[in-house]
Image (cartoon, rainbow, N blue to C red):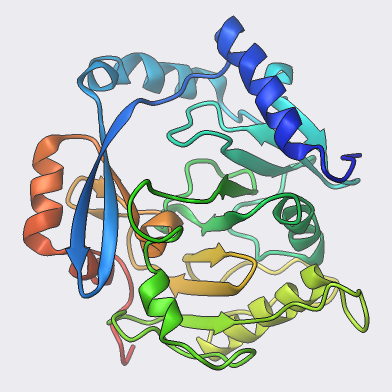
Length: 297
């Protein structure tokens, strides 16, 4: 079991070894910034070398089938309790990118459980980070085996630690489900001040309760207290120590641009320079609207 205060050191030690033996294959990118309605979006573009090597990376991914059963021991970071473990993301764009994976197979389209939030919060308590969940293929999930993800802050070298922070700062109420002004699509957002005392509920229990309330607010299936529940639609979930954002999804791609949960935090990844041109022409918020569900539906 992970000892408190050791996760970052473990990540760095495992990363160093995995890089040396070829188990960790970072994806090189260059960053551009696109401003839209007060948000400075970061758009990462695959480097020329990576684009030339994409076929090899794709073959490596396909060859491995389910990469979590069994997982690569060289990527193992820590046990997170009886149901979850932490692995390095083999094909990482950002450093210290962790996957929080169920030990036994659970479907990525099952709703999150208290155990999922417990494992996530073990990591979130270690350092300032963004946790996220791509709930289903249309939300950008790359694997059907349930896995949450966590990346350290800041998400970009320029601007606030989370690019959408200017929209977050407009929300003054805590503990109340609301909406972000510039998000012209179905979503819900909540700011919170977590009580770390553990009484009457732990931070992960508080977040799980908010997650259930957000799903209900959007008219989506809500997890039961005991039974496994299949989600009623794909969605993206973004979590920090101060807020949560949940966005139902209609599709994964805008053209050839795949959008996952980090897109709604203000971070996009594109494969070609012409895709960056499309982001600039379309505008990031319109791109997000196009892969989400329109207001009123």
